[in-house]
Amino acid sequence: MLTRMMKWFSIAALLTALFWQPAEGYGVLLQMVVSVSAGLVVVQAVQARKYLWGIGFLSIAVLFNPVAPIAFSSQVLRWL
Image 1 (cartoon, rainbow, N blue to C red):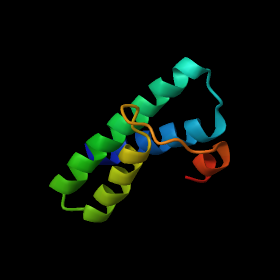
Image 2: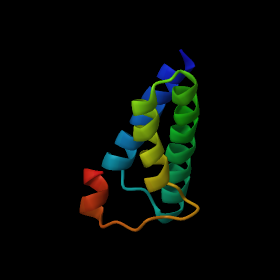
Image 3: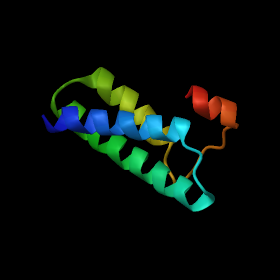
């Protein structure tokens, strides 16, 4: 149940990132929320032996992490 909630929370945060153009300070906060929630889903997916979900959300956590950000153009970021 918790894994399902975290997946949907992460999807909602990603959709928010797609359509909302935040101020500079909110962008880091949004990256942190997406990255942390994706990391939690990875842990829960591995525990549930759903490795495909784990790989997908691990890539999301890496792409959106605020510690070592990867710079994308706005068009590439929207596509991701």
